[in-house]
Image 1: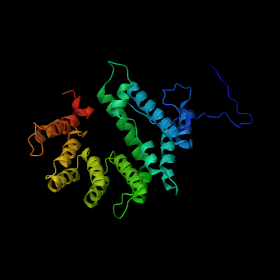
Image 2: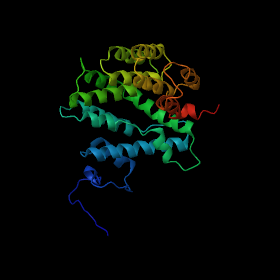
Image 3: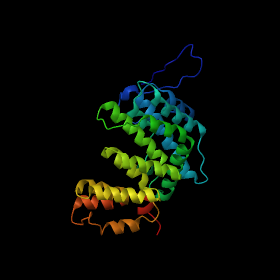
Image 4: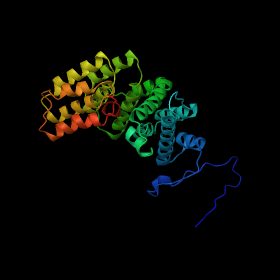
Amino acid sequence: AEATYTSPGAPAKPVPSILRNFSAPVKLTTNLTEDDLVFLMANDSDAFNRWEAGQTLLRGLCLNLIKSGEPFTMPASITDAMRKILSGAKAPDADKAFIARAMMVPGEGELSEFLEQGTVDPAAVYAARKFVMTTLATELRADLEATVAANSAAKYSNEPADRAARTLKNACIGYLSYLDAPEIAAMTYERFAAADNMTDKISCLSALSGKDCPERVTALDEFYAAWKHDPLVMNKWLGIQSGSSLPNNIANVKALMKSSAFDIKNPNKVYSLIGGLCGSSVNFHAAD
């Protein structure tokens, strides 16, 4: 069956927003151009389609970078669309949980699934995604820092609006962690030390886990001292460290296997430590 829809009187060619409100759980093939996706990512009033356009655009960007290789380049239009998404958090009725989700770049596992079998180079996938995250963090640094400040609460609250603001704030801190800037590491540690809830503690610790800085070591030591009595929390501590993208992190994983927080006979401990390492493509698939 076929159907044709026209938009008489439209000043320009319309950009279709298809299957709005997630009206059908199907995989859709369209002829939307990169410019169309940028427009939908920045302007679509349907939250799901706006997220889908952004994911399609960012996934396509990463896959093209993986296939073309370095030197990488980033279209300014994508950065501008992401800036518009982030600026939406200033609106009184902003859906901050959605904004945090819309900012996410597809993960390495998802990107690998779209590559032809036998052609996946984990190092190339990691490098391409890191370039996108670092470039966005660099270009949007002022916006990210302003959003972190605007969504920081004096004390913990479990109300939906406060949870959404916390999610957005921590997403921005995650982006900022890609910057090689001592003041970012210092800010993240200060927030870790002052956090009055586990969500913020874990988010800041995760942001520090991939940075080779004194704040990372201090935060990990302080977290261990405060929570070594709780086996479940220690599972998070193990997983955050083993999943780090720090070069040669395998040595740290081997040392953690001798830690009192680890027990080879406990499946959850093994899953947290070894599973975390398996999730770090840059270390698990390291050439050496």
